[in-house]
Image (tube, rainbow, N blue to C red; front, side, top):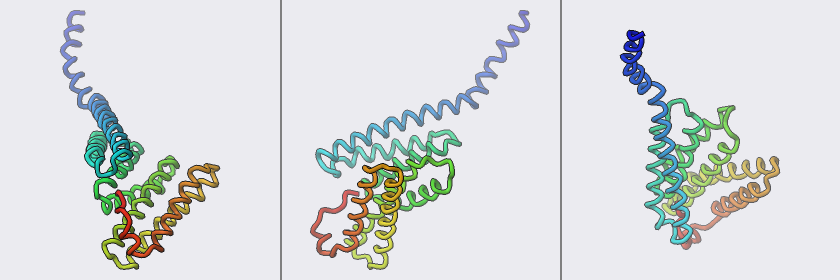
Length: 211
């Protein structure tokens, strides 16, 4: 009996080692990801509150904090957490839109939307959110392209893509009986149409888009 107890006691470090580099490490990464995600969400909420009171420029530091924390969450997230990873990538893209990263955000969102649309297990709400965010990125990208003097054949493709996404979201929301979402998408669609038709001198007289 004493030998059995001694043998079991000697095996404890081995078991602890195996746990640390197995399930223990997985749990540690999950905890780190959850902690970073909580920090990111808090920073994003703070940024929105600051922007509502003092404007987007005043909220830039808070958005930068959110961007970093979302990145930390992605890096810590255990392998195989595909849906969680996609959701965090989307929220990070939203934060980065306020940090003068539109070109990168647009490319990332295009890839994310493609991933989500091709996965049958995707949450439809997440896909709609990603599509709407991509449409917003394309809308603001069009605005900036026009102000920078890009030729019509370049920015027109961008705003047309944005318009088509808003139209799709409006139609889907109506089919699902979500009047509020449908109205919001229709208003965004109208804004996209107005941006395409606006004269350049009219845009130059307006405040720069926040993103």
